[in-house]
Length: 284
Image (cartoon, rainbow, N blue to C red; front, side, top):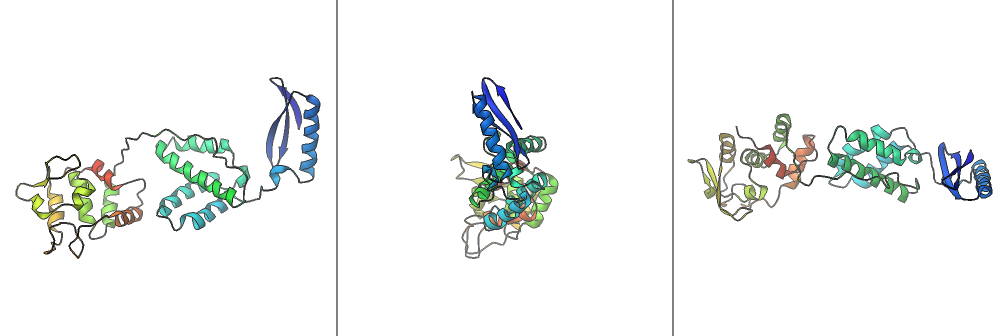
């Protein structure tokens, strides 16, 4: 413990709760000495301001509680689990009050060496949310993520699947979803175009799909390879419907988010959307 002069101001330097602390007092050396004596007394009597809520709660305890109380009923639960488990590996063993902004900066820097900025930002978002909950639950007083800047992200997002990921995804698609994914992978068509596909749009003899109402309002023909052709032919044709992909009532599927998300979760694929299948376009 001690006092020191810097840039015309006196600072006090001491340790409390295992952490080194520095406080700027002002231009008076006498005042700095007085404040330091006061801090010593507060520490000795256990009345130091920051000790009141610095409970001995390990980071991994907060992580488990966060998943149980905050994420379990959310659609993002599976993704949250992966991120939280990653954070547990990095911050495991630390009490909440011991995690500093410097620790967060180090985590950010180390993760940036192996994953893209957007993925690092997702982890920082969850970490920040965890500490916000900890503050709300009176487990800690401060959020070490405060002041830590996120990486700038490239809005031109590009994500595609490797061959092994494609195989896992197709293996985990339910019956009605699999041909839709196969068509997306082999044609580059958008989800809306595929779900709105009608039987008369398909020219098997010429191996093309005629799209009359595209996103750009233009007419175009999409070539279909043998894989896409087999997937379409294998779809049960509802005699009461003109749509290729439809439910038992003959109505086109309104959306496939739930089934697609389930397939991704079972395949252990993260940070991926249906639109990204267009980036994984297969030509063979």
